[in-house]
Length: 433
Image 1 (cartoon, rainbow, N blue to C red):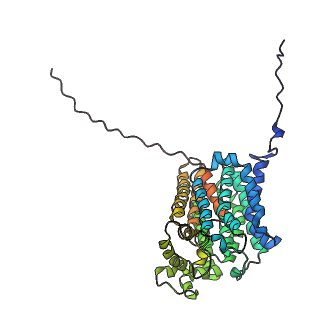
Image 2: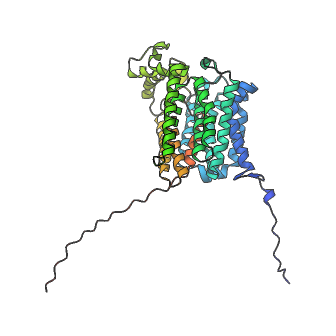
Image 3: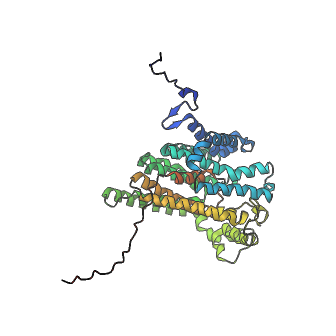
């Protein structure tokens, strides 16, 4: 005699990790979010608060553990074109630097630090992209909090003032880059309907103030581009109130920029860019590159080394040994074509332009939130394309966060092209009666 009663199904939910769920995120998701947030804030936290770095081994271990926990999701969602292209570039950068002994430019732990410089940022990009594919808005929320913590640490713990730009323990342009990306994320939250207009203005005040303190011309140009795009995205010509607000914001923005250029250190540096070369230790180039300050000089001196080593470059992290400044590359484009050669530069440009095109295609979405988000991310990618010309970004986690958000944005499917058929037919002959 068989038992006709259905067997009780054992609930094995508690036997699997994760257990806790908050929204669409599980405990594993929140652990990974916390690990990335710690990695983002580790440098300012250890530099200005803890005073102990341990060569960044804590974030390294957290990111490595996160990759193990998220390996299956990454392979299913984010290990796709074009992100996989940059991952291959990063692996090549490390191998190229190791072969050409770029690790010797570090005072200690050179191989490990070069490994982190090349591969840690793309690892964070894959993690963020995988999370954004699961819950885009929640990912943007915790990333905004992480970057706001970075900016607040820079403001209150670094001792930054209007005259302390060159005395900071972290590069002022690096602080300004993170701050500009924070401004972009705040705008992204607003256009996705998760941050009202008045709180947006209040929260944007802190990043703008920090950028003014850093004296970064790069960041000033970035937020100017972002705010101009934001005003354009927000306007609705069919709505009188929207047009009035856009006109008012444009006026306030123009007056604010005029005041900054005339009365602050960053304005003086912006207006004095073309005369900066005269104050440098190296002689001028007698070319148009002299109009671009010290960055123009770096581009000038880098070109002969690229011509000598066009395929493989001079080796990752080796530019400091060749240039008269004895400084690292202050341009991501230089990092790719001078240090790593065309084998890295061409795939890098394919990766970057693919994300730029993806963000631009998002403007065709029927969803207003996605359409606005895509335009804002397109503007952010344009701003990053400018920052890449004056600052390295291969180890700047905030930049790879934007890459991940561009990749994960919901975009409309490609339009099907209508096939035009040409039918060749002879005229019908008239029938005889």
